[in-house]
Image (cartoon, helix red, strand yellow):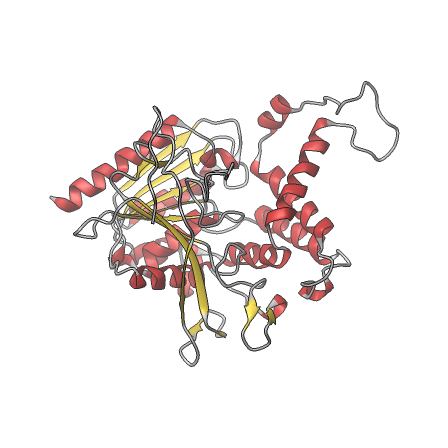
Length: 390
């Protein structure tokens, strides 16, 4: 639970928070994944913010993107210098107001944020799973999230909110557990990866697997495939930006020099920036987890979910109200993909609001402080809560 500290004038933080853990699916009651594989026990890392109402009707579930985890807002200690990944959105008086809502976020299955994944120990061997970990899907991730909510005594949520891969999870929630979701906020996301998105993910995975330290995924206890993972991050990071953002931030400016080195050194500022991003990522993320999470994103296909013939058919089970938001400079999941989602929802006569926000910073725009996005989400949540309470 959150431990509130005194707010500053802007009410900028929920204060000191702690990561919690829930373990379930102990053998012989393992969960069955979409692949047919069985997995257990499963441990889920999660954080919560705000207070659960007596009626348990103010729950907002946040769903993180590829490189995120359950640490959404606040700080883990008084000496912690880095807040959660959506500090600008989650907190007292913010877009997702923790004075009003009980916010839950868990690290996804297969990642490296404390929830069971390839870098965690396999109880059968006492060593990290590595590639012995089964391939998981977005549906598997959502199934585990639902198990956590049941553990917390929550049977219905006011909203599920996510961007990018988190948006895919939010859409999966709407059709997998339609009677448990009052509303969905899907940000900078898609119903299925394009060939372009799959291609970038495959290039990134190949960078990891080509690193001699990868050793077929069994590198734990020895040198890690840091070079491959750093390159994978550099590839991915380019897709999160935009041409305009990179032109404005870097242009063709040189990095601390007046002329070219005429060597294969870091000449340009953008080169230095990408190497820095790669180095930072290596320090906090697991290479195998990157493989598993990107593959889950590639497999997600709401248009063919469960053998459906179209997205309209897949979404027929949904009952929630929807807020769909795209960003004008997002070329990874362009606005036309959000509009396809909106059309499919409307063909099912669902309550849908859509907004394209003009932003020149690319796919990552949903993570960057944006007053318009904050107002959109705040107003949407207030409307949903008002309507279901009427």
